[in-house]
Length: 200
Ligand SMILES: Nc1nc2c(ncn2[C@@H]2O[C@H](COP(=O)(O)OP(=O)(O)OP(=O)(O)O)[C@@H](O)[C@H]2O)c(=O)[nH]1
Ligand SMILES: [Mg+2]
Image (tube, rainbow, N blue to C red; front, side):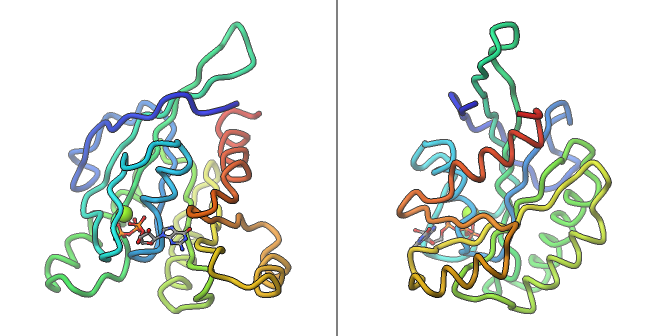
């Protein structure tokens, strides 16, 4: 199964102005600047679809993308899902009230979105064990329903030495190891997503 089309659908501030929950959703979340928007672009092979930047805080709204998959099944040649690019956690350079509002909107989406099936938690592979990532991890585990899964995706592995990467893999046997720069880990992540959403 492969992705044949990816288009921007709409942005939303929170769950209230989000599209109707009629497709399975995969949310990309994690610290600001960890590589969420870049990963989405690399996965769907569309540079610039989700806006990415070296300045933290680039993504400020919940952004919905429609994704079309091609299957090997002639009777059901296409399947659909939505990828959701989220603002980063822990970005300090906005006002406190704005930050609180973001967090309310974000956690509201994560906790209450019925069609949300997969949380992809991105973690910078150079900075393992940060308190903010632990908090997010605990939060996700505490809200996760029985029909949802969490995928831990370790990003920017092109910045690691071989032995550091081996250690990270040993310590996180269920993780996905990503480099947008070198296009690593895309098939692993895509397979994990389609297996869970569509059973193949
Ligand atoms: N070396 C390296 N840099 C990366 C990788 N992925 C993303 N980056 C860089 O990291 C920076 C942030 O990328 P974004 O995709 O905008 O990160 P984000 O998580 O969407 O950030 P916010 O929207 O601000 O929360 C950019 O300068 C990217 O070029 C990667 O795999 N390797
Ligand atoms: Mg972003």
